[in-house]
Image (cartoon, rainbow, N blue to C red; front, top):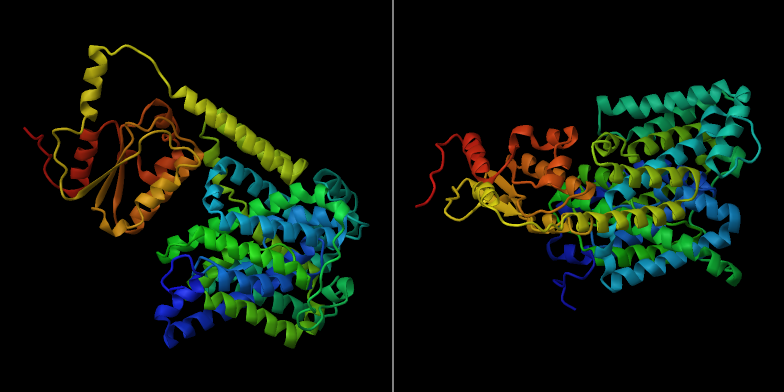
Length: 559
């Protein structure tokens, strides 16, 4: 097979032009992101109801395979917050053998999605559903860390949100001031150190400083050693999990949920990486890698894994050039396991809880909520139901109900765009300013159009049509005259396009939006992205606005 085959892993494609200079960049980036991943992997393991070393094994084994076999040049894989809630629930009901079954089953589903070309199907998940369960997962992750952050002395904490919060509230008198102080110190370092320097991973500094303070002053706080007996050196031996056939059918919904979350988060992370690097990931190759990684992970005591957005961004900012950086990240964690595993026994659990508080806040997409309330009632309802079910019921139920509501809303929006009316002189006269025939497009304008409903499942077409943004003129007019409907996913896509144009010193002008799109595009958040003056009623007004931007005389109509 030729090395130029685009369906090969990016690690192999990178060999065509790989140099020693690129390796030095990858080495530094891999070491940096490996240190960043260290506390996160342990914290995700603990929060998932397993051991801290299970999170580390996942980051090593799955992280290496995702980088080596994936379709993104800079993707970093490992355990993430998206799985914490569902993994904890599986472990509580079915034990580690059930979790191993779910992880392997999800891996097989991901592998099939990649091999059959269904990787692109992830885009059919509406943004309202994504934001809803992301907000909900963030709340749940934070709620699971309150006990360790405050050092509360409680019994087994319930897996359901409301009983958990009631138990924590009833034991608030057992608060440990030393644990709270260390937790607050961890938060302070993570939040304020990046303002001084971004070169040093703040989470590692917080981990070292707070662990040192705990040991030096013999603080009475719970640690990894006191709760889990420490972390063994190196990777565990290859072990075939103890699968139970009677668990197969009950675990199928959980396996589909894990596969869906893994596919969604890995694709989101890869898209973020593409935007930061200008590269283009292969979604199906990426899903094949995710599938293989999740099949292999439980064989070494690991948990579900996917692409990690924050670690991927750190990898890129640290200078990564190829998947070698991701492999170095995994080997860095392996080296730490081999050399320094016993030292992890001294890490306070309140410090890892503080790390997860920051993760929960960052993953929550809280800034999106203001924009949601500027949408119509139906869109708000989809988000609210998904969010509420994620927190108070079950993530699997939340995704299923959210998708069902979004599908009904999709049908409603399509039906709403169909109109039957007589053609009158007024209709013809109102349409004249929108007509393209007889108009001259100046050289400083690129004209794009959206035809039909621009809803979830179709927004990727805007990304595909605008890959080579450097070929566009200084002013890009997006004609919406024939865009019959839009939803939150469509709005987000146009916001992203506007941001990309702005970063390339270009301007986006929107024109001709119909009634339903016009109403949703008038939200304050959207106007902040595009500019109120850059949303105009028709193509002639758009050309006039382009002339204002470019500083030229008005364009005359062709004869």
